[in-house]
Figure 1 (cartoon, rainbow, N blue to C red):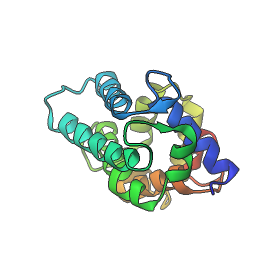
Figure 2: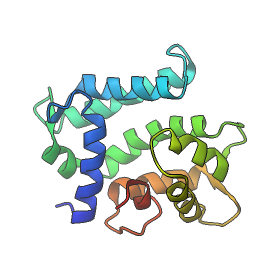
Figure 3: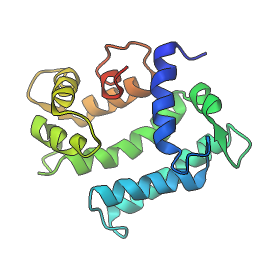
Figure 4: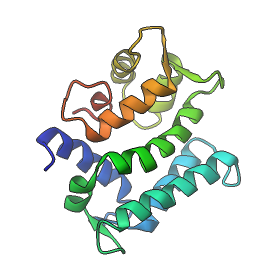
Amino acid sequence: MATDVETRKREEIFTKLDTNRDGTIDENDIREHITHFLSKYNISADSPQARKAMDTAKQIWQKLGSRGDGSAITKETYVQSMDQDLVENAYIPLNSVFFDVVDSDHDGKISESELVSALQRDGLSADNVREAFQRMDRDKDGDITRQEWDQAVREMLLSSDPNAPGSIMLGA
């Protein structure tokens, strides 16, 4: 059973994924969410990043769809079905694409200015992004590595700690 913190975070993600606002998520919602992401970050639909994102979207749906009736899942099912397998085999690969997009200078790490620039597109305030950056930069070297990013994604989806670095991204 999900804690209150986990439930709040997962419900917020569900709302973002429910692109047609019908109260369920289906394969088309996942695809539309990824298409919107690609457009927002000016990623060509035929680029390797876009193909990887769409392939990962299919993996997410295959795992999510199997937890519902196969055609759509409810918010309650989404909240309760989040687990390590789904995170490691679907959300981490998808967020790897986002990491690569945010890493605009392609040096294999994310600077604070890169994260602020990217996440302000999603409506997050620069101050909140800076605070999240400071928490995600666990070794305090001024950059977020892929390992630190992946850990934050795990925390965003699985942690019941509202102070975990990944939790702050959703305002837990």
